[in-house]
Image 1: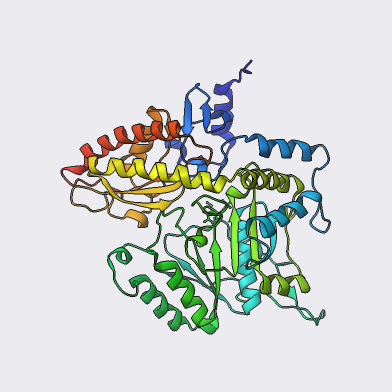
Image 2: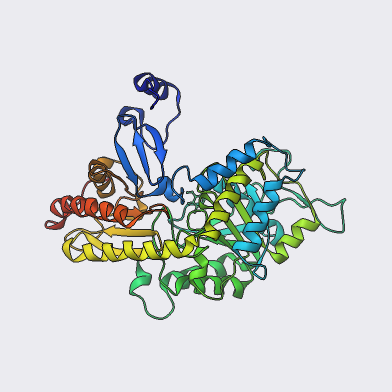
Length: 468
Ligand SMILES: Cc1ncc(COP(=O)(O)O)c(C=O)c1O
């Protein structure tokens, strides 16, 4: 029997006391989830929606997967919290699963640390790059997304400093503390797609690199497919960028928080290119399907060794939390035993086929890109240009209800599917790995109808909504 909840009272409390994101109070639309189950969730008004973006392209095995929740339930019989100075069963099992079973015993990977968020993982990876190279600057792609905190390590006190191997009286601060050295490089688009020879973004990146001086640069952080921005790069982009990092002796930090653990039809996005091996990899989301807050850093063997031998004043209350680690164990053991990567490839191929089938019918469909179960559609107007001209540079001002992704979101919701996008012209499709062919058909039919609305509104005239 379903328990009844007083949603009008809950709405009052939520509106009054919760500090909300992305919508101003005056425009806030109260959308409450009452329950979640598999690939679907149910709103407080009883509406049931197919989750075709796995919340934030994050809940990879759907909602409340029995393998994950089962392991969590078992872990809760024995564990609460264990501080990071002590080991626990699930931390050891999760680390072994990631380094040995997922990446393979002879891979580049040395050690992993487990956190409470992808942001923590990115912070840790960039600090490790600085400590390891003794340099300051991190190069970062425009349109990328790596998290939303700043400042916690700028407070005085323990702040990630390292006492190196062989000299326990020495202290090495994180170079560039307080941090100032984040320098953008071009994103892998749009000129790259039309280019021949060395890609324009790579030429520009090398110029930036030389202007700063590689001796000042700790590393370059990249996403194999931009998650927030929603771009899969030109096939030559990643190998060329990594070759630049190698040529100039800077580290490559591969942020796979959104793409990692199967999303793109490989365990990690970088594996779409042969011969690439990151120096540091940040992960999160899909490692436990977001059953609990999570992030991971994997370091290559040399870097792992460097930090493991040192006395490194780092850590958070939540590092290696047994319950978080239990959800990783439940998730990864299930994925390995059931060849979920192959499932992602098959269902991703079907999704792509259905999307390609929509293209001739809808002039608003521009480029379709992505891999596995993360596909992206760029919407264009009658002139073949981005409908909102600012496109991925949008500052999210003006009437967001007029942005094509928001229009599609509403049309999809009216047809039982949760899916939208982040930047105005980009639709992101990222269903759970457990999505069925029927689910995909339902979503594509809804999208077909939603795109009719976009075609009619923006297609013929090339009309553009005001965005600021
Ligand atoms: C590529 C990437 N890095 C880092 C993050 C931050 O992770 P979290 O939200 O778990 O802190 C995200 C979140 O979406 C992400 O997509």
